[in-house]
Length: 322
Ligand code: COA
Image 1 (tube, helix red, strand yellow):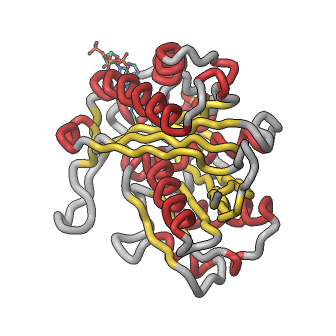
Image 2: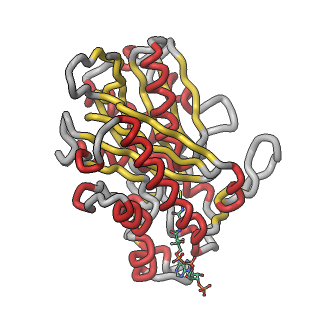
């Protein structure tokens, strides 16, 4: 069976760490409120001159090094972002050029916080179809650029960063194949107004800021995530109990806890990085995955369930054996 196997992961964060107390100097908020309602203690914020592709390239280089591959081995780059370097060309092509890759295909995916799950699903389909052999899948965001720094209900929630995975098409003949076992993605555009940017480059010629109805997003997130996680587990034909690690989108500790409770998944098997990264949108899942690979929690053979939900609404999950 031809499988899309994760052969390397990497991540990159801006050096500047901004703790809650620093935001409380300019916003009517407190460390206590933010920690209690979200689990967030700090986030990384990029320097003004930094670009999304800077972190995407750094995460990609780290993933390629972990995989022991040279860039020219890659024939597919899919980059998930809501904060591209420019309206066009795709940031994936900037990454391609900076890595010295001149062949294959490179394109961006726009599904906001679910972007990495969408990108993994597309990469898996292309690898399994046989048109590509090795994919670099990246989630990279500078969400700080979209924030209204006067809105305490959103400014405290997000951060910047990037994460990457290298996937290789491999024949996996055994009973427990490695690689992506199931991927499910959904969207429902009726809810766009609950989480959106009120402008943006392109057809409107305006620059917007992130707007969110937090409580309603919260409610939809728990329901949608629990449903798609169960759908993905069922599609792969495994049991919930067999899952070694849940790697959730790191939006809010309470969403993660409520979803885990709904599915009877113990928190001891959930990777949490929201405390230090906050919500990095499309970067959050690959960032968390890379942290857990590097600290030795996720090991080859482990069953990992990745999930995310974001603006659109979009949501999805991927079950893979590391
Ligand atoms: N500091 C202090 N108070 C704040 C605050 C902050 N940073 N942000 C909001 N508040 C206030 C509100 O103004 C409101 O005050 P009021 O009652 O006087 O009007 C109060 O806290 C309660 O606001 P509410 O929005 O109902 O709080 P909540 O418990 O729902 O928590 C979120 C707010 C944003 C943390 C929560 O709704 C959430 O996490 N939603 C999901 C958001 C998310 O993850 N989105 C991304 C998905 S990809």
